[in-house]
Length: 149
Image (cartoon, rainbow, N blue to C red; front, top):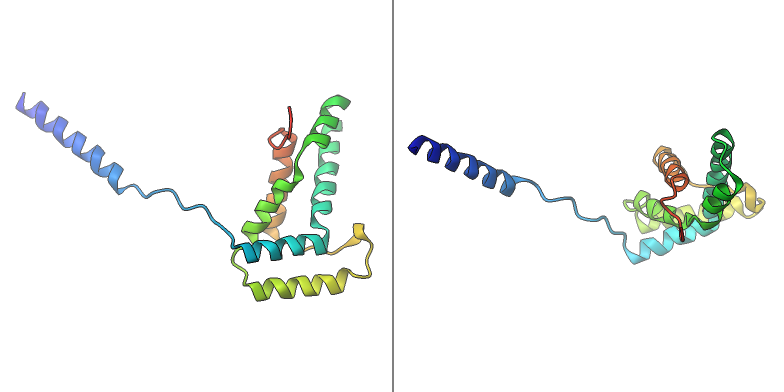
């Protein structure tokens, strides 16, 4: 009986210690209001929101055709999806850039895009942004960003 109590005590103490030593989840990454407004300005200057919408729309239409979605389902996904959720991913992408770097990006893209057509703007992108955009489009196709169901 003493052995059972000893083993039970050891097991319980191990569980308690293991729970105390487990690292807490990482804190939510926040971007300062100044940087957020600069990223919003960059999105506006590059017409990035339009790019996200057109990219997602073309992928969704192609997927809908391949999987023989009916028109009502395709229309619901396209009309009721909130593509503004992608801005959160952009805030995360630019969180480590300084305000001066963001201002330089804005200035550069304004200069480059001022003579281009709105559908032909250059946009800031890298592998992470493209990967996030693909994942975002998949989530939209699954109906995760529907405004009303």
